[in-house]
Length: 417
Ligand code: GLC
Image (cartoon, rainbow, N blue to C red; front, side):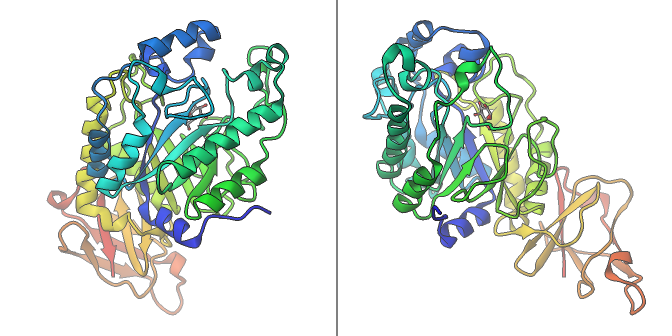
């Protein structure tokens, strides 16, 4: 049995509640998201030509990390190598890497330094699937064996866990046991086992606090520390590939800020700050982190609109962060217009929608008799009914009046006490 992340690492991770996901690679040059090599059927030699074009002159690791910090994000998970097989760091195990582009620099090393300066933690996205590696896709032609790919994959994970200081998380992607492969994508198929036991053990040995997530859309395996949800909240499956069973591990929801992970020139469907705050609150309410993605441009910048939305979320967190950070799943049952979070013994209600002049809760613990606005401490009028010997907690009603001028346009947070 592989070991798990330390309880210290897991606690830190859960307390953090909000992180930044970054998808950035050669594909960003094309501006049609990170799957473009597959979707546009670009042959390897053609795609490789992007190497000579990668020169993100505006890349500033400090600016990226400051954007995350301003948004209230406590960690960053950045693509080290996506399905296209191109390494975004100075790996010794491949020449197909960022330091062999005109850019020459190692962005992950620069991010690691910037993260240390700003007190933001760093983790890495690692693709299990590789559309470029000769031992993944071209074993017949290259004479290589599956073991050669495993040595490469495990070797890269070792590099990431030893060359960039403290690692908060490793996020695997590209093994989807429930997805059927057809003629179109037969080359996605792994040539054998990923040897997860060994891989996970390696991480937990080198970085005992690092949490491991594998985006398999399936029940987490031993050694995995989180259950992940992609583009959906736990229990939802609007995407068609999410597991709806919640297995009791810490949760991480990853979501795009628009509709794509990698830079997508045409995608203008950027979510509103209100929607982003709601996803953050709803994730926290079920005991989950939100890993919110940005797709930097080929010039190396986080799109201005993404930055703007993130800062707006950050300003809300400055008002209401005590209801998100260090919280666990709420015990007051959620309803359509509100969810709850719990910070030690403090109960927070996130009012997401106003269907009337007040919010009416059921199931609030009996000892909570007063209410205040989290942002200003203003005490609110509250009425508790049915809370007597004959009526169970679940049948009671707690009515809280929120004067319109005190409502937060993104999410009004109330503490019950
Ligand atoms: C999907 C996509 C991948 C993306 C990931 C992020 O698995 O295949 O491109 O990186 O989601 O959640």
